[in-house]
Amino acid sequence: MHLQHQTPSEPSLDTNTNSSTSFTTSQTGSKLNPIFLSMLSVAIAMSSLVYLAWRNESTERNRNIRAAEFEMLKDLSELQQVVDYAQIRQDQSRGDPTRALTLVMQIRDLGEIASPSVAAAAAKLQLVWVQQGENLGKNVEVSNNLSEEILSTRRVVIDSLRSLK
Image 1: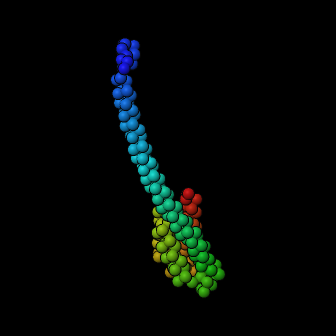
Image 2: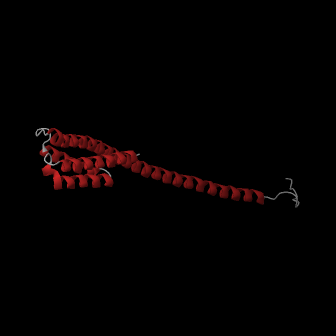
């Protein structure tokens, strides 16, 4: 057997120990990376789910508002026809105040689903109807007031539709 004499310039056996220690440290560092990445992935996934749920709810709400407001525009047009037939043509069948009341109530109900400004406009239309509707066809001023309120409500509905995204 031949024994080798170690000189200070030669590496000692401790080098292997140091390299194994650095390997262990490097291994521990690599264990932290997957844990961190896993936690980051879970956080991103959860935030994505929350965002998608919010977006779907927002989209559904806007669809409901759109549908209600388009229906309101139809009903407002029909209500204007009833007012016109009652006042201009003096046609009791087409200008029936009962039909007008039904439309006003339907507009008011649909307004509750829509935006707050539309709900307020629909409530004001109902108030004007309650105060003056029984004189529909008997007084030009009543027909004019109802027509103005119908037009005002239409403008609010259209503005609300434009604001939806």
